[in-house]
Length: 242
Ligand code: IPE
Ligand code: IPE
Ligand code: MG
Image (cartoon, rainbow, N blue to C red; front, side):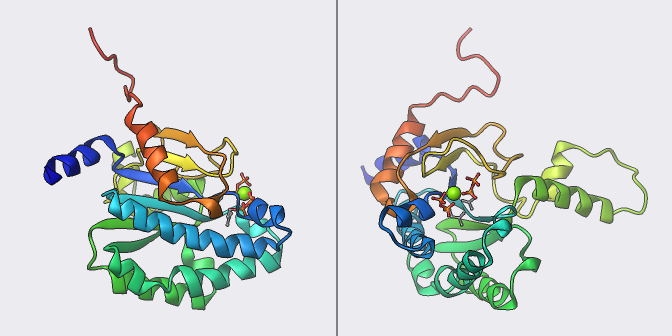
């Protein structure tokens, strides 16, 4: 019975969920708090949802945590986020191990301070044996940047272009070619846009925009979103019945 329920959940829930964690600043503003407090609470929500996704047997979760465009925020906010990443997001090794989460990173981390890069490497190493859920943190990530970096990797592997570039070659050169394309993109905070997240990989993703601000998220929000997904019909350009 348990097995049946388990496979039922896996069949109808998405394999790979991408989450645009938006609304931290507005959450803080509503409470007359500094934006940083919204980010602090946002990290707690991120942990709640990792745990929930692990319990729901979602195999892949990708978080949009810092975009290539977020560098244009005030230096004070960017500095706070860098500190939060190294002290709160990439330092929870015991927690990630307790839920069976392997942590990966997507994006160009060379621009981050060494303290953040060290924390990222330490967390990746300390969770590499986990396989229950793969949690990828997209930081200094942009869908356009990933495509450009992928093409450049392909070009740097050859002295002359003897082979046509293709969709397959593109995907082979992404940051994590082993991760399947995203099935479902969920954005909190009510905005209805993608903001440069997983542009190539979301070609056939289902989209979901939820008004609740990210720091308020708990397991119930994820379950509701997954239930909505379970009712969607994905056609991939085909037809259902002849
Ligand atoms: C998302 O929340 C977190 C990051 C982009 C790092 P915001 O900081 O964008 O929150 P709002 O959209 O201003 O409310
Ligand atoms: C998207 O949120 C990026 C992340 C959640 C990391 P933003 O708040 O930066 O997006 P825009 O500026 O509203 O499009
Ligand atoms: Mg925002």
